[in-house]
Image 1 (cartoon, rainbow, N blue to C red):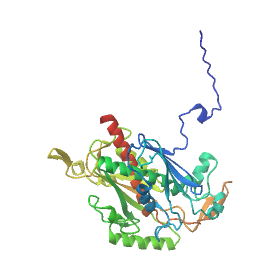
Image 2 (tube, rainbow, N blue to C red):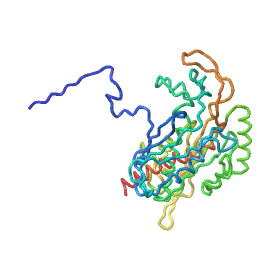
Image 3 (cartoon, rainbow, N blue to C red):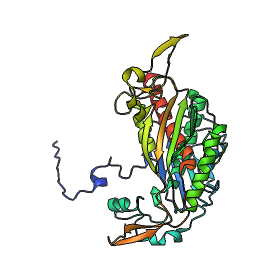
Length: 384
């Protein structure tokens, strides 16, 4: 019996057909704990599929809704007034007695308050510093109503999945994840990352645990909103209780994965862990974290490394900062081009945040939890 193999070169190959592992638009994140988000800003709804969640975890919508409430629009006078309840529904992956089955968990949130007419002019014009032009350059088509997948409403799926990840971390690994607004423009909050609690973060609408700085931040955001303008700032994230050993030593370093996670968020333009860029002002002797042992436990006398060394957690509190740019939509005419590449102008319309930071806090927490739970499961699988 003879077998013949015929090779045909097709100069006009189709990426999906000829390269079945080509992922195209990357809407998935994680390895063992993997999420895939879906949906557009002005479509029927937003959702996520969570694959790899450990079985027999007690889970209901009540575990997920609080984080979505912290992310949703219309929650205070300093965020977008779009009215969405962002009520989550669990569609699969849960037993009749409320335990995870180990199978994919599908979550869905309906879009309720769509006003696509506010975006009619943007059907033909690209908004400056938005993803309108770049999406069009890549795909030749775009969801111009609300920005489609580039809208911050996409993060509903991340926050919902992150709530599950936080519960796994808390109940199975004793890890707490938290984030808060550290800075808005030039106003900087004085916050101790080792002592701050969730109730401190939620004590005001800007989510800065420093009450004095928070009051100044709120006044600034209100003034900027009245001017039709926007401001950015910094969110600090942390994880307490992470044991030594999570992370990989080369390409999947823990801080590298955290950086990718944060920079995948809308409007996030910067990341630093530990002392970050400020570390260049110190010498090596000043910057090094001295190592000691007490009662059979290793610890460092300082934490300039932010809880990560060599890409692997060292048992100290993990902390980092993320920079969010001013929201791109401003209520003033700006220079742009239309889809025919004619020079024109465009004035922002619709309902938008003057500062994304208060609503981005749960997004940062979610992405932190997704990274950490994935590495926790990888560590358990590899090392026990």
